[in-house]
Length: 537
Image (cartoon, rainbow, N blue to C red; front, top):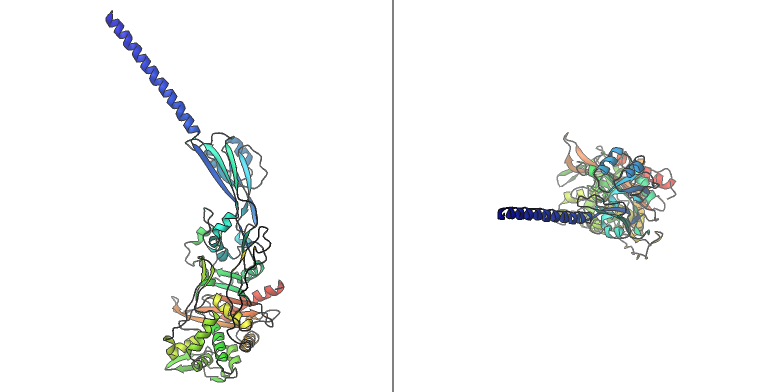
């Protein structure tokens, strides 16, 4: 009897133990289910727009087009609502099968479906075929929507603060799966306004420049500057890149992300204009005569003229027209290196210019040192723009501007300021910088007349515009570097002003690796001038 009682008692204890364990297990499972159901949120962020980047006339370089993004809860109804409005149904199915909320581009705002919200989004950049204007100046964004270069980086915080973002939050379980269509929360950050960064660039001039250079410059740059203010009106660098597909440009050997308009190069004969200014300011007459025999001996070093038989007797005007190296070497030796170096410094050579803080700086280039210029051969090289002299398209534009405006130095500028909330005016007036005179109006007049003769009668005939005239200077700058076939790499330049009588613009064209500035840079200059004329500039 006692054994039977003990056995029954043991069975009862086991049953109670099992029931206790099972009840505990059920309670724990319920608790885990509740935790899973309230595990967290899954967020989708849509940057609807970013602050504007305007040209000098408050025409925006960005946010030109509108696309539509759908925030989608993964349901069968979502597929049925979206299948005819997406580029790829396969992509839509893959996203739906993942079981998590997602974003996908659609072709319309008019999609009505529970669990699908469609938002208009400003397309930041135009397709390259439709513009892609001033890509090296505007810059681009990374995958997180942060500015990486150009204005996008320099003013990144401001542009972000003056944009708008939509965040969609979904309640999800531990696996990231949405708990229900009623658990969606939409939050908007930022107010719609049109505040932005106002540049000195002019969209129309930028388009003219890019049209003129397209297919004609593989590597090089074009820069247009207001001769009176130093404001950069257009800046193009080649090869260029797509702001929508920067990844494809990262590892290219031709370095499309490098802004060649800000880089330093051998400048060659364009620098003869600086030598001329130094000579005239030092009292040397424009009627100075010299007989070019095709070469000149400087302490045993022979410098050749591009016209090997020589130009014969000529004065400053005719030497500029024909770009005679021996004449300018003779002129430089009369002057000495110091006056030329001093004039170059006043024009802006040898120092960098910050155009976008911490982001975009035009290179300093280089001027020969004082000790170097104690060597007559170094002075000879310097006088016609060779040797250790290096300069940027920006600095060449500064030189042209000072000649065109009557002898005043200009400070290059790229940013005018910040716009008001309507995007119609500057938020505050910008202080006017008084120009500093660096040489006389008489000197400027002589050089302008010589430059006009270059276009009308000399080495720059292919730069002559259809209307308005122009003045300029060709250059075919030796680099001292050679291709595999043994030929020297030459930089082709044309730098000048337009129009001839009352100059408004300094235009600089650099066509890297081309043999002749007159053949490969001057025609691009002409196309830009013609475009300005047709647009009423």
